[in-house]
Image (cartoon, rainbow, N blue to C red; front, side):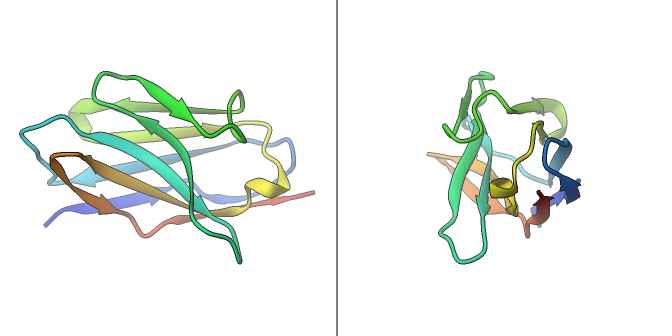
Length: 117
């Protein structure tokens, strides 16, 4: 059974940093797949944060561009999100996803990030 587990969340002050990790265990697909991060703040819809594809190409939401960096360890189906210069508006539950157009998608349970001003 595939398991997607996020870690690294916590509480920091504005301007601080956190590094999130996500490991997808027992996941396999014959086709290319991506790993990505979304987030959901209280009372708001879930939104895209960042994605890294099988070629290593990265994309970011405008709100985190220049502050967040996504990276991966393909061999271990692991993705990281380095978050610097955190702002109170970054407060949310961060969710990791693995999958792709021809590959089944799986989500983790999320990890809480709280940024205080």
